[in-house]
Image (cartoon, rainbow, N blue to C red; front, side, top):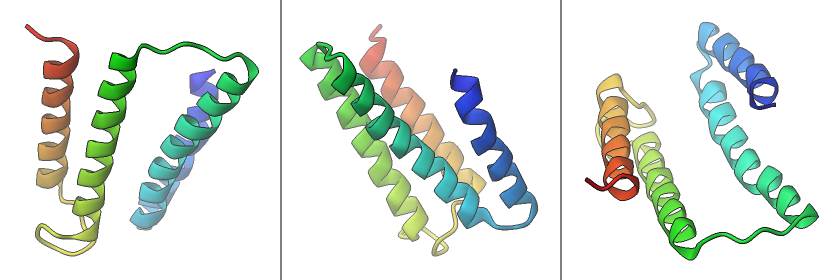
Length: 108
């Protein structure tokens, strides 16, 4: 099911990038993630309520909000060029996100 819902988004993002419309690709990724997080999980929870451990909810929510804030700051242009996310900045963001997740979820 995940492939069926993600392939149209991937195709439209690739088409937008090929046409040089990076804003559409960025908005597509951000919008689809928000929709999947809020609507799909919300509808599933409305149909059959489920219990979620408070530790998991706190950890995942904190990480998601932190990464959303970092993405906003990067896109807004508070570091470097306004409105552009460079490969270096994106790589640094991805590495820090992965490292944070690794420390929180899989402590050694």
